[in-house]
Amino acid sequence: MARRAARGKPFSGINKVVAEQGNKVSQKLLLNALRSGTLNLQNREMTCIPDDVYKLNDPELLKNVVGENDELKWWETEPIAKLYLCSNKISTITPAIAGLNSLTLLDLRDNALESLPEEISQLEVLVRLELSHNKLTTLPGSLGPALLHLSLNNNLISEIPPCIAKLQALQTLDIRENGLKSLGVLPASLQSLVADDNKISSLTLENHPSLTAVTAANNVLTHCRVGNMAKLKVLSVRVNKLESIEPILNCPELAEIMLGKNFLNSVDFVIPCSANLTLLDCSDNKVSALPETITSMSNLKRLDLTNNDLNSLPPQLGLMENLTSLAVDGNPLRAIRREIISKGTNAIKDYLKLKLAPEDVEQSGPTIPDIKPDEIMLQTKTLEVDKKSSVPDDLWDQALVCGIVRLSMQHCALSSIPEQAMNLRATLQELDLGSNNLHTLPAEIGKLTKLRKLNVINNNLKELPTEMSSLVALEDINLSQNKLDAIPECLYSLPLCNMILSNNQIGKVEPAKLIQMTSLVCLDLENNNIGRLPPELSLIPNLRTLLVMGNTFKIPRADVLARGSSEVLTWLKNKVPQP
Image (cartoon, rainbow, N blue to C red; front, side):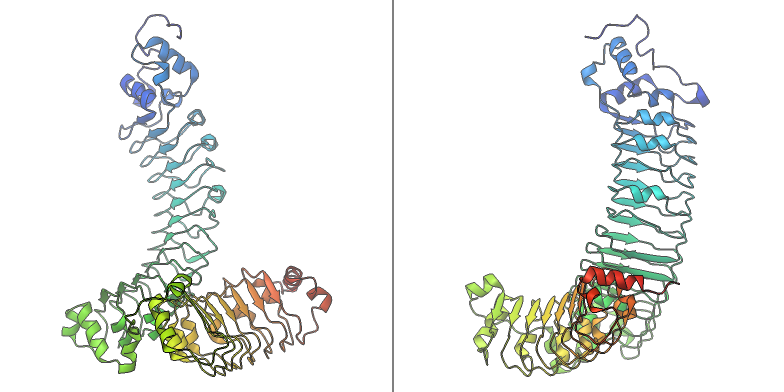
C-alpha cells in the first residue's frame, strides 16, 4: 500500500483551478478519467489544454492521487486512452502531448489549431486522430506509426503533407474542403479516400491494392485515370469538369460509379470494369449514345442518365433483368413517348423489348433443361470433349444444368464455335479451343462476359472480332500459332494479365497502346516478323515477362535476349529517349 501523503484537500496536487486563460478541469472529471481511461472536455470554451491533462499519465501524479484520495485505488486507474477536446478554441498543442503516449483516440475537431508539435509522433498507439475544422496548413514531419484513421477536412492544406505517405497502417483519410490541388503520394494501406470539395484538377490512382472507396466530387477535374485496384468498390467524381475518362481497367470489384454533373459524351470507359457494377450515375452530362455492350453489365440495378443528349436507347436495355431503376428524363428521346417514360423503369424496359428482333430476345438466356445434374460435372464444373468430332446434346444440357465454368474442345477439327458453347455465357470462365481449324471467331463471343481465360492456340486466325472488347473479365489469352499480322485492336482495352502472341506474322508493335494495358504482366511475341523493338515497351506499367526471340530485329542482340526478360526490359528502358 502506498504511503498516505500529508493531510489536505483530496487531489490537492492536480485538483486546482487552471488559471491560464480561464481554463479549468474539475476534480470529478480528472478522477473519472483516471478510472475509465477517457476524458471528455468538448465544448468548454477552452483556449489551451490544461497542464493537468498533459500529466494524467505522470507516475508522480498517480502516486499523489492514490495517496491522497480514499475513493481511488491504484489498481482501479487506467492509462488515458481517449481524449475528447473538440468544439473549443484551442490554438496550440504543447510538446507535453508526448506524455499522453497511451492515447488511442485524440479528438481535436473544431478548434483554432494552426500547427501541431513534432512530439505528436510519439503517440505510438494512437489509431484515430480527428483534426477537422481547424486552421492547419500542414502537418509535422511524422505522425504516430499505428494511425488507422485521419480526419483533416475543413482546414487550409494545399498539398498532401509528406508524412501521410509514411503512415503504413493508415486505412481512412478524409481531406475534404481544403485547398488541395493534387493528391500526391498515398500509403499502400489506404482503404478509403475522401477528397471532395477541393481544387484537384487531375486524378490518377493506380496500383493501390487496398483502396475500396474513392470520392473526389466537387473539384475541378479535367483528367481521371483509375485502374489496377483489385478491391475498389466505389468511385465518385461527381460535379467536376470531365469531358472524358480513361478506360477503367482491372477493377473487378467496382460496384458503384458516380459521374453526375460533368461534361462526358460517352460511357464506353466503364465497359472494362462492368462485371460487378450495380450503380452507374451519369446524370447531367452530354452523353449522346450508349454502347450496345452496356448489356454486359449483368448486375446493374440502377442506371441514371437524366439530363443528357440521348436520342435513343439500345433496345437491349429491356433484357437487363437486374435493372430496377432506369432514369432517362431530360433527354431528347424521339422514339419513346413521354407517357411511357413517366410510367417508370418497367414500362420503358417493356417498350424496348418490343423493338428487339426475336433472335435478340433470346439473348436473355437459354432455357435450362429439367434434368438431374451429373454429379461429377456438377463437382468439377468442367466439360472436356477433346478430340471429339461431335458433342451429344445431352452433354450440352448437362453443361447448362451444372453451370460449368470450363469448356475444353481441343483437337476437335472445329471450323466454327458450336452455338451451344455460346449458351454457357452465364457461367463460362475458361474456354480452350486449341488445335482446331478456326479461321474466324464469331461476334457472339463478345457475349461471354464472364470469360477469364481463352486459348485458341494453333488455329488459322488472321483477325479477331471487335466484339471481343466486351470480354471485360478476360485475363489470359493464348493466340500462339495463328496468322495474325498485328496485335488485334480489341485486346488493348481488356484487363489482360497474360497475352501470348508467339508464332504469328506480327510485323510491328505499338507501345503507346500497350502502355495503356496496366494489368499486363506477360507479353509473348516470340517468332514473329518484328523488325524493330521499341524501347517504350519497357514503360508498360506492370510488365515482368517480355519474350521476343525469333524476330527479325537486330537490336538488342541475341546475347541480351538470352539473359532473360529482366535484362531485356532494363536494356530497353535505358534506350528510352529522355524528354
